[in-house]
Each structure stands twice: as structure tokens, then as C-alpha cells.
Length: 76
Image (tube, rainbow, N blue to C red; front, side, top):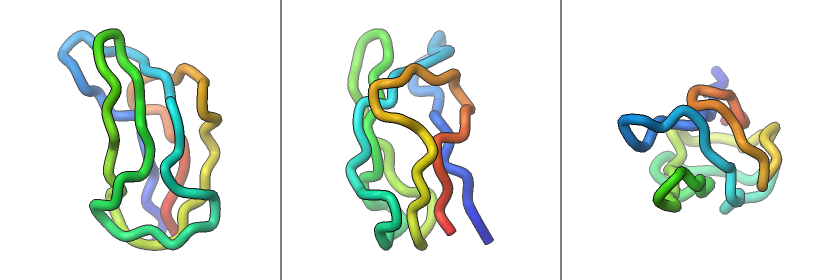
């Protein structure tokens, strides 16, 4: 079963954010709760943890702006 990795809403008024960097490589073995990527919103940079354990498949490009809720990868 694959889990979608989505860009979360960090603040009340956040509608989009920049995927700053991936903290793991495509194809890496990921553990639930492991820091996975960082995002920039208007006022802060936040690390986001993996929602599940498995193999990371990256589709989002670092440095790109995405809407809240956009799928930026999966964990298989």
C-alpha cells in the first residue's frame, strides 16, 4: 500500500509553500517519523516527518512552489 506525501498546511493562512529540500534520496528506505523534507512558508522553514515506513519515491522538485495538499511523493 502506498502512502501519498503531501505538502501540509503549516499556518492558518498558508495556501502554498516551497519544497526547500529532500532530506532523503529517491529509493531510500524510510522509517515513519524520520525527517523527510523541509518546506518554506511565508514566515518559516519547517521539517516534515515521514507519514509511514517504506521506500521513498520522489516526484516533487526541490526549489519548486506547490499548493497545500499537492502530492510531492509516495512511500511504497
